[in-house]
Image (tube, rainbow, N blue to C red):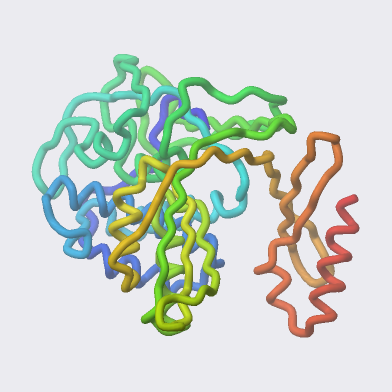
Length: 333
């Protein structure tokens, strides 16, 4: 992602207010695909965390002013939809425009970038191109932070596959208000990274409670994956073992959420090296509807494909689901 002279969204500072929990409940009740909901809630949580830090309150007590309007909520959901559709993509961003001047908010005049924007985009690279105004809003900052928790020092390399440009409504005299996105196809070399692995065991929660907790932990920004398994604990009690893969810079927040969502009183974590092949997402039109597929190119040039299980699960009958999956994957060859 390469924003040249644009914000990643806009908002009207005269909209009404809404609490974090109210907006969470609104998104959770909406008719959204599961991964879209996860992405949207991840963006929203980053906004809430920044506001909680600035106002020195618990996250559940955060009351939004500037982002509670329908347009900004839809920005979060639209971003979540795009991110979910591009599952497997890696994101990077060029240096961000600093902007300047003051903006009118519910708290009065504040300097640009807004406090929430500055808090969210800590460690990102900025540039001052001499153009004033609010160049990146808190919602846009949260989207960037959700996509890129650890900014890279250089943009990716590869074959340029596609470009896209979107225009904002605000007009600048010196330059166009646009956001440009470049899509590169990466090679087959595995990407190496450091991840944190968090482990803990539970022996006093029901199966339903464990499922809810696992889903909640998956929604925390910085969580890569959550898996559970069965073990035998002390006194022969059946225990559920959790393994959480996470981005190291989000460990503190993820650990806090684990202690909040589960009954565990202790956990263990360590850093590990991880190598991942690059994935590409695509959609396959079928008589039964659109199916999403993930494609991975192996070092020997061979391709592995997997149909999104949520799409296949919409159809009833085991044999039908198996046949649909096989047909869709065959059509990709």
